[in-house]
Image (cartoon, rainbow, N blue to C red; front, side):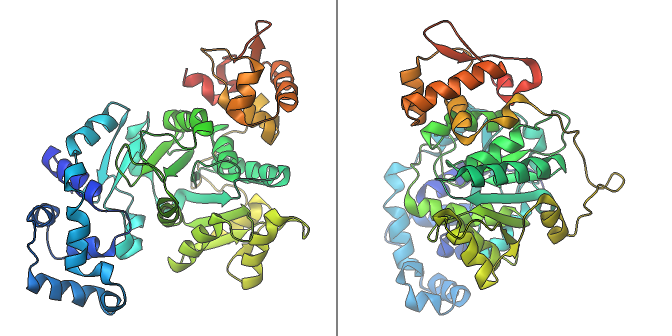
Length: 415
């Protein structure tokens, strides 16, 4: 299987602009025709082949009767309305200029585990990474997703950080969504052990919006660290805004990319439960961490455990046992990175959020840092004091900036 040429990439880029993710009708049609033929059909205004509609109905079955959006006439009308908005060359130029590219199922680097999504698999994936040579290493066996509440507690932050860090040390890639709270803690923990000698990405984030638009803005610094040491993916074209339904669609990719989904902390109606449900539907393993019965942030994990949807885990050893992996590495089967404590490992959630909005080149006054992080000014000042004491930040008396100190932080490599 060879890599797609420019013409094929332009075709997929345009289809990706016209067709929203998780469109069963589109993937069903791609079983009947090539991407080029589908694009040509969409461009033929008011043309609806009757025989093709019958074939589509045969693939989709009864769902076309209950969901008219899956019928060929409705689907073509939906896609044709976007023709005036399509600019595939601009999309490809944008991602190329940002250390990225476009992956299709015809590319040997495509993560084949996403094909398990069937008619819900992505048409293509836009990627950004400083280490494209590792794109072919996105294997199911080495990916574990960790998800949870955006408003995580200190407990959730600590549990997530410990699990993600230790699993990364065992050679797993930590997959999450780049959001505030649990997602950020998981990514940050994996990055804390990032090593240029690792044979896979320490962490992978899947965005709900375009790969050129780091979201949320408060995590932009963290997401740029991920681009430098890990991998950022999106199934929508550059420039696409994240919306609620795109977040829900994105969750199926987090579950599909990973052999195990761990929910470390989640409210009763958390989006993390949606990710867990996708994992169950795919036949993947699901685990949850228990919390206090008085904590609303653990109501979702307890719900998963009570329903028997998730296995109970309280440590990295529990996770490894669930995966059938020895608690201790055996021979060369599991790559191991030597653990080295770093100043960032001891940060609290608040301190880590302050760290993430700062940078090395430009200083900021405390009021600016408080506004960027959303942390009250008094807590911001306390956190800045801790960062100074750890030697990862400095002040000229008015402004604060980060200090690059060799391997103390993965962030210095971005600078």
